[in-house]
Image (cartoon, rainbow, N blue to C red; front, top):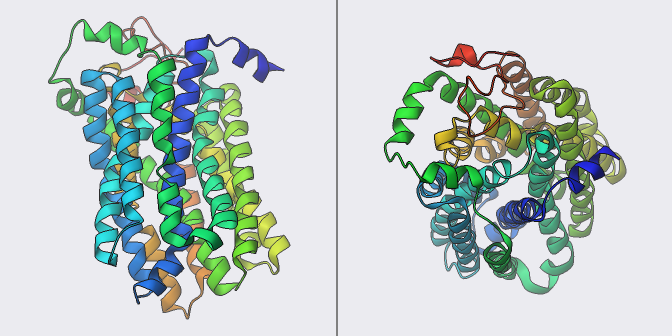
Length: 426
């Protein structure tokens, strides 16, 4: 009942901002995960192995910080709304072009460019939404926004299940151009962030680097946290379909069905833990989700048969994306006001850069142990789940901070040990 009342409390412009950001991130994730499902077939067409194809994934992730910086700076300079529209158009065009790649090298280059576009969307969309909605709804909306990521994975799963036999891997990338249609919704229904409009009256073009230097401790901490988080998500997602196809030898239909199951769990987990974070705090909710993932590992990769593996995958993604469901609110609350268009996305994507070798690392580890993808998946996830819990548990948060006010005016939050002018906890 509280969920419905919170959603009803949003005005029409606030709801439109949530919908636009959700769709932008959903379809961005859809485009990214298409490659995850077709790596085996790309490798076969270009006469190479899966480990070499994963370089495309690695470069996509590695280029995302550059996109976060470019589009984040544009969002802080020109506004969240126009930047979001350009961003969506660009990643849709690059996705479409990927379907025409004549060689693996060209595909890798296109996916690297796609990574720049993908890197910008999350930070711009999240800042637009978090600056528009009331503080009390951030936990719920954070879970909803982050649920866009597994929702995109779910759409990719369904597309792979239903359309791959008809269109092949190239056709899958061409279908990925459809997100461009979201731009019409953004143009027609979304208002600019009120926080950006207030700050535009007094622009400060040197704010980015000066503010990052002033908050160096917070910046480093956030990058480390997001490195662990990105290993957590990509370590459980990127090679899991390959594990099911290659090691378990499941059919395309079975792999697609299991992917649908665990992405439904991810959506439910993100919303559940996002809401929980409003009650127990951002850090405690993240720790709880991360620790829940550890005992699930044996069921997730070492059980037998599609039914038990689907159950393990369901529980794993409930935990992983449960922790992630808190991140949009958490990073935007920690962010300095003057660079909120840049800071959340940039630190998130720098964490992605540091975790970008995950797929290649796991594939290489599996090949070293005679194709044992289960061992590679379990090893990485066991380590990073502990890292996420420790970094979050001993870290900081600013739950409920009021955007656009000075720290004397907004006393909520606990991040003082990372700043020169600390926020006093209530």
